[in-house]
Image (cartoon, rainbow, N blue to C red):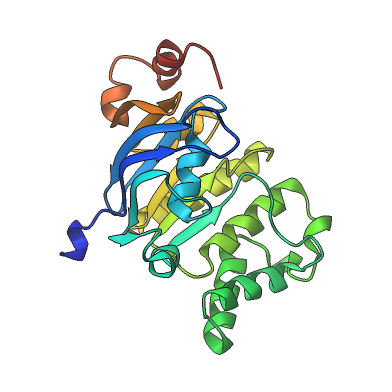
Length: 246
């Protein structure tokens, strides 16, 4: 299969039922994301966004169906699939007692990046996210905006082709949000695939070229931003389909 035509992410008939749940969370999700696309995933709390993402990154396994990252099955070929993905979760999952440098070095080592290569990549990420002045500070003492920047830098340390961002600008000020938007546009322009979930509809509208809306474990809309916002704002379309704001 020609790599240029291999989807960044391919989800086929994805079902998910958790052991303690009495009904399915996902009811046959189908979603193909080409390489280099910037897609936003919207939906109310409990719609299935996080379950879908967790299946992509291998945190949980599909009950039925398949998920592939650059042609690699996330269950059968877990290591090959996972190395292509960088994840910035909504909740901070970082050791709060580590310094910024230690966090980035540990992430690099997890993916087999060591020595001079690790040092070079760490310096690049510190520069990109304006973190050099904070490199020796422990994560627990950083502001909310700085924590978000460290989380994104960590996600990018192994230079993944696919970046998955779950509420990446939650709780940050306007200036920091705009700075993160500029970085994400740069990453996208360099050819990376980005999957973004956000409660800020204006963020999705400003950044994404495609939108998928999930409700009750089903995709109820999947279209380009141009088509969706041709006659209405994204917020109006979302309210018509879902019935309330996120």
